[in-house]
Amino acid sequence: MNKEHSDYKKTLRNLQIELVKLQRHIIKHDHKILVIFEGRDAAGKDGTIKRIIQHLSPRETRVVALGKPNERERSSWYFQRFAEHLPAAQEMVLMNRSWYNRAGVERVMGFCTDAEYEDFMTSVVTFEQMLVRSGIQIIKYYLDISRKEQKKRLDERRIDPLKQWKISPIDEVALEHWHDYSAARNEMFERTHNPITPWHVVRADSKKEARLNVIRHLIAHVECPDRDLDIAKPDHEIIFSYHPDQLGSGQIAK
Image (tube, one colour):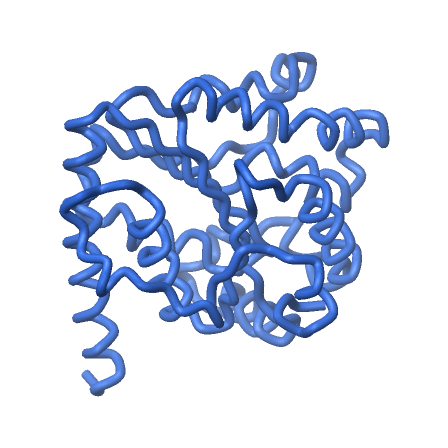
């Protein structure tokens, strides 16, 4: 094991200890935490979530990764199938993709109508703020990678037999629709970033840096008196709150 990897493992372990402290506090005080992960295909959502939950109690930690909606779900209120997975008291729920599918893949691939898209975009912030008023803390992360890095990771999926379960028809055309996804992402940020449920952008070309900094950010943003804030200081070059200027500065991949 080289020194860089050894340092990563040590830092990760220390942060995971802080996550265990955090969970104890969540359970003790009946908090409800919802963490949303969005991002391009192969941006590293699975790996980041895996490191967060690795040593947490499975009784109070849930990962939600919903598949394609069935006929009944398609005929229901859009948010209905997500609502049943929201956290109850003492729980932390991590959504690996969320209702923002409508602003991303559904928009780009034509899986929703213009009217459905517009209805979502005009109602999602109100929906989230209603959840916040009900006592749910929402933290939204968008994992951002370069086109070159996405191509590399998608190619690796096709070769690695342990990653081939991740390959989907959507993955196959992800690079072809790169600019369409960029436009959809930009509009999503512009219309759904707000002071109550802001977007936090993660520069994720380095998987390890992305994982460590998401965990640091999560620890820093969920109240817990026992946490060690000295080791939970995220690198603001890696993770930052969205601002429109970032779209032209190169901080967010074009």
